Image (cartoon, rainbow, N blue to C red; front, top):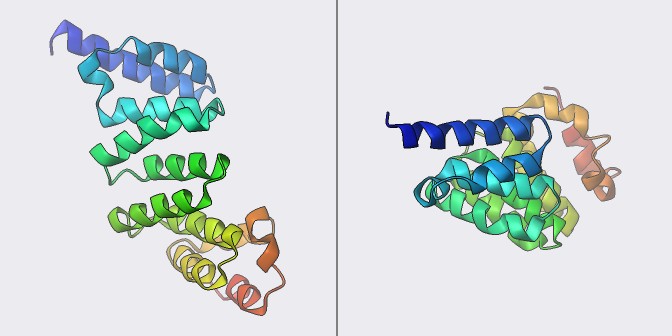
Length: 170
């Protein structure tokens, strides 16, 4: 590996470490030092978008996250971050579309289905909410524990169909 490539890899590792430590500003600082080529890689794009998201700069995070999703569509964390940013800026439809696209590439990811159910619930669409929640619970029954406290399901909490799904045996 050449020295320049080693440096790029080190910068990415440092950026990731700063994000793990809850220091997104430092992560962005490291990412700004990347070469133009390295900055276009899906991992760098995701880290940049995630750092901006953690700094509550949701609109700015959209471009690098969308680019990362385009480059590497099978990475669930990118889609989840993208959906979260769209939701935070009030574009629930785009959040749903992002996670629907994620389902195509990650049909076995319970967290995507759970978040998609949350977004459908916020949009007031009970059938889609229950459909995606059912899939999430089939893949990961432990999500059932979150149903009583998840604020996004508040409007459905007393619904008999929601309650039946919440109480179904794991």
